[in-house]
Length: 452
Image 1 (cartoon, rainbow, N blue to C red):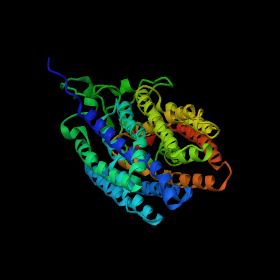
Image 2 (image 1 turned 30 degrees about the horizontal axis):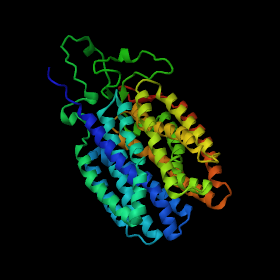
Image 3 (image 1 turned 90 degrees about the vertical axis):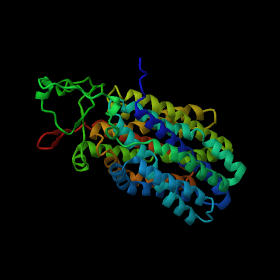
Image 4 (image 1 turned 90 degrees about the horizontal axis):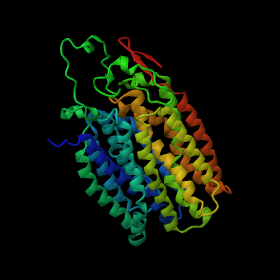
């Protein structure tokens, strides 16, 4: 028997996983490795360094619609080459900073811009286009890269301790370019460009008397109900409340998407959740150092453990999302993440830290993976990059303000970190409610009327 070839989409997932791992180790979680050395070298405050992440996220949010449109128009691979180049040069320039102003210019102008163009969003657009029925597991595998990469941030910390933060930045720049370029080369935009279909499906062969030809299927439908031969009558069978909606996906334009209530419910959810990464990527290590008096190495080890524990959440809940009501799953994960953060605000000993991190991290990883799956499920794949970019703009206030506000609370208030964490836990409950209120929109043809 002829051996079955691996669907090329899985090679794209593997390449994207590698890119996300690289970005996570050196940039996303890597910032925490530079945080304490910069404080010791320059005396910068937690609020000032938290503001750096806030401004980077401001840039990312403003850049998101443009980056999404560029990725949709020119394809992920071109944008990945550009973004990886900017990040590599950015790390090399980072080694030469001597002031907070220089740090902001390099970090935002090169690293953050490069990340917006060349890492997470670009590979997500590719994977969303290559998978429909298996999108949850594909995105889950893709997003494990951030967990796997973050779990190795302690290696960057070791390099910084041995080479200094300047040497660590130079090493990060070289690795970004040497590893990033070959991975970007593997990525392709859509399976149709290679004569393939999403999920590796085979095109159905229809005869002139095939009864399915008599059914009027809207041109904007994409395959998503189980197989290319699924009919609308099959897809319309009502599922149980906990099951995934089996109806085919519809490719919405940006204009159509923003006219649906679901778009605004998801915008509220993402806007609130955007504050959560400020805890783990920026303030987790400083929190442990300040509140429990642990060393730099121990604080980074806890950060690495957090990143590692997001991996089962990213992968496991991605698989589960292919079979269950994704709104209920997302809402449950937001609630659990809030509980984890609330528990973290009460930590008194290092013995409690691993248990609290597991609750926080597993749910956090699941939310990260499900965001892309949820958007594709609601609005299809054709304009996914642009729609995800537009919806990201609504995350700007929290994404920018949260790192600064949490840092300011820690600098000025007794137990400021703990207070900020408790506020975040309450807000995540609001985000969960917003997801539950969202309803999958439908597009009636030929009028193009949007209904929920």
